[in-house]
Length: 185
Image 1 (cartoon, rainbow, N blue to C red):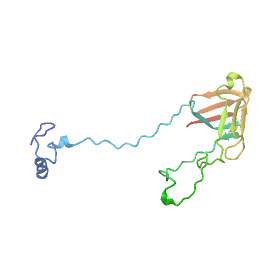
Image 2: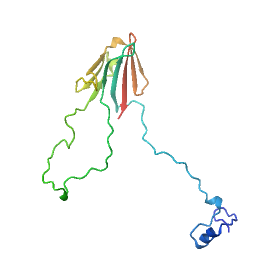
Image 3: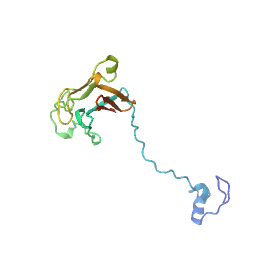
Image 4: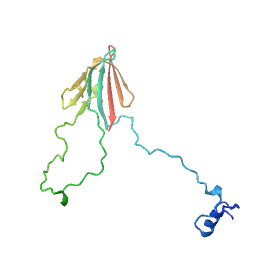
């Protein structure tokens, strides 16, 4: 038999020859039948952007002493992974035997947990000559999120190490440092 892809002569096994003659298998030689097997690749994951931008959010500030102990700190609570439970069940079917609904504007969200934000003036505190002010909105103190406000005087800052990444380090005169961590949301 002659291969239809490369034109070479080949002699297949009797079972394959019967399948070729009946038209169920293509008339190709063994070397043309071999397909390059692609290696298994992991699924593509979303890229994590390590550059600070306008959407970056400040989530932790630590003030270290010269002996590397933390005196003041502010943090947002940790993010807990949301369970992927599939599509939620649509309420109000005939077979549910539900006779009344309570309609609320919150749509079932927890309205008693506040949305925490760390507000800062890092972008323009040196240009305006103001102290660096980082405050938690709403203002409260707790062991999970730390204090409510950190103020770093302009005269106390020796240098600013900012490479445009998600970590900013302010060196304090006398050996301490203030470390600001951002995340892209």
